[in-house]
Length: 117
Length: 112
Image (cartoon, rainbow over all chains, first blue to last red):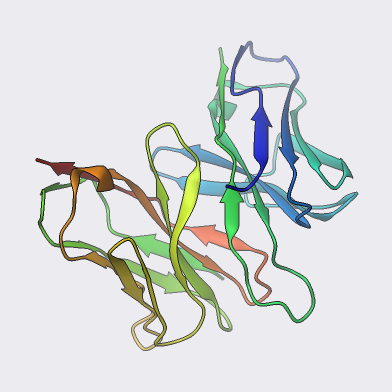
């Protein structure tokens, strides 16, 4: 199994508070992703990273920011949590992206369940 | 743009029944196609993949064939088991291999 650890696994917070979710990998993969999973929507990409300090937005990035200061860590921050951000958040990593390499696959963490009251 | 459409669930089958979950896609260029499975309380894990037209991905008795002419990647299994109960996601990666697009997922319940 790919070494991906998400923390915290469960969190309940109140509207307006900041929240940071952490994803830690031991695989040295270049690409890291944050998705949210909601009923009826499947998985939607929030942000992704293609290297240290290199990040880009996904389809649902509003209200979220990310940082990647080390290869192994990718942080997702909700600056001011809202009830619409209640969701299950998944981190994923990929080994693809190197020049000449074929498309790889995503390896997922176990998810972080966030409830915003 | 890129997108994936898969059949709505939930699907309930008796053990040993035949399974088909439909998936169609829209993509530019030459995407790779994937099926992921999510068991209760867990993250997604790769079930099978196909990287070019006419390729067949297979794993654990599941199969899917990359059909470029119909832009489809339907998942099939000849005889499902209770342990196959899970949510199945069809996905594609774009030509870079770094952007992934997921369908909404299909929940499968297999009853003894």
